[in-house]
Amino acid sequence: MNTDPVVVLHRRFPGLVFWFGARTGAWWAIVPPPAGWRLIEAADPDQLTQAVIKSQSWPWPSPREGARWTLGEGLYR
Image (cartoon, rainbow, N blue to C red):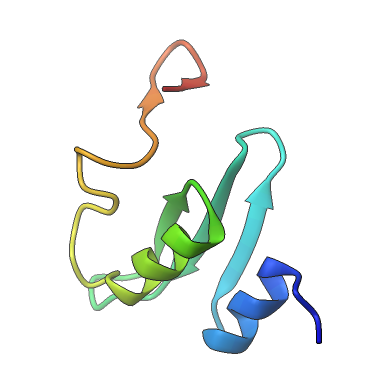
């Protein structure tokens, strides 16, 4: 059985796009909520799974959890 997280995510959510950002160190997905396609970022595959499941809500992750992009610095905090 393949344990590659991207393969597992594709099996669980067929038709969605998933990848690991080597430069960002984050996991990414593109999901189609009712308002249109949206990019989701998560710290790990489990958090990404939860984000996809809860993709109808906004924002994900909530401001109290997950990574934050610091504009101008190009760093995750």
